[in-house]
Image (cartoon, rainbow, N blue to C red; front, side, top):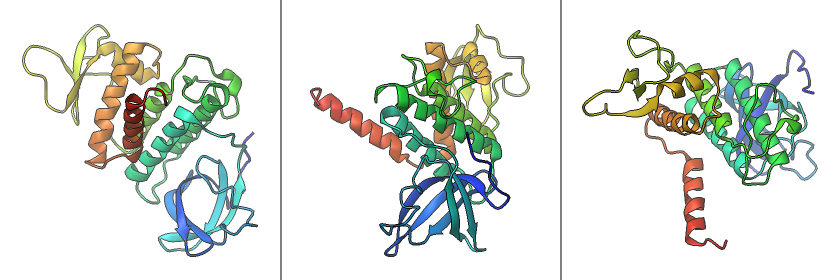
Length: 276
């Protein structure tokens, strides 16, 4: 069960950290009430520091700090919940979520609904690592919470977890991801029709001629399923991934994601050495 924060504590996670001076760390913290910001954790790299193993990615935390400048100073860090290890595809997916937050959110811009979506996704990825082999995954369900590893089912994938978080991220950052109607207040999306989803415009009925630039072709069923969070159908899952990749790339405005590059390099290495 999650701890209830006192008035001066905020729920949070460490997205990234690096060494600062001889014994300290600079953290990029992601918090429920204050958004993302930098914070100095003094002395935590000392061998006897109580926070040495606590201030790591994916550990749910309760945090307080002080300071008025751009870089705050850590005052208190407490565990908000147990954190079983992430591994395999679940671990890589969690780092991907962190990188999206680091690159796409603004400093000290709180998004409480997005924090909840991240908290849920990390819990689901943790369940993946708990009950599945390192290279397997789970599909999230509406009742799955952190620590409820028994809700995981064999043969599922991480893809629904990622797609739901990506969609929430885009919506919270102000991107109007239209899925109910054709672009320009057009007719409702029909499950049996095909559409081009055009960046900064929305779904356009597919017809004769050249497809629009900067667009992907989707079934109406995919848009309806994605809107409702239903990603069990393989065709929906594949097309939803194409759509989210298009929209995330557009929002990144040319920035490269290190996690994508790492996964691509790992897969290339395994193809070159299939016995590895």
